[in-house]
Length: 218
Ligand SMILES: C[S@@+](CC[C@H](N)C(=O)[O-])C[C@H]1O[C@@H](n2cnc3c(N)ncnc32)[C@H](O)[C@@H]1O
Image 1 (cartoon, rainbow, N blue to C red):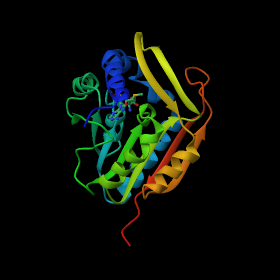
Image 2 (image 1 turned 45 degrees about the horizontal axis):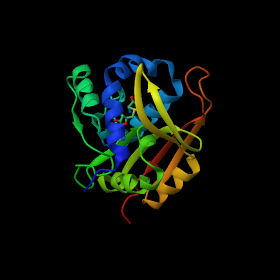
Image 3 (image 1 turned 90 degrees about the horizontal axis):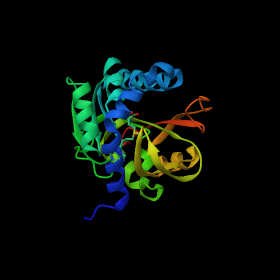
């Protein structure tokens, strides 16, 4: 199948910024207590159901993958950008990272205890998100969890400069209510949501976090 042009552009942009993105965000979680709280709650819920197998989808340089492992999970990363995957392998040599797309995961049905997509659904045109969430539902075990983080708001914006580089990248701010609806349509149940104010430094909009579960089979 022909790859949509936005996928090509997203891969190219993150290939360009990978090393600098990793350097700039390496310690970012230290300054984000709500982010750590959501990731910590996700990890606790996955562990309490007896699971550990978690995919960090759109993992970038692997900082979230590493954090999830530090919380007792067996997390591995997948990313569209080969340069991001190379940086992740360099920075976290003990962890597993692979190249792939969230729109067609090379993961067997019903094998994951959890999925984290941390600011990674934001480059997929919203009309194609139902397919992404169908992939999440397909690959999760019954009772498995999904955690999403994204910038709340409306509409696309174009980035022509980021992380010290000229790029050509679209990003979408998303309405949490709409994303919740799409998760439900994919067969998931939304269990928690957090909407927090921007940090006043780098963030310009509210930040949204959604936690959803694949229901146990009837
Ligand atoms: C803003 S970065 C976030 C990276 C990482 N989750 C973090 O928080 O540091 C977005 C990442 O999503 C990846 N990405 C975008 N679309 C993707 C797709 N369709 N499948 C897999 N990864 C994707 C990009 O290559 C990029 O590394």
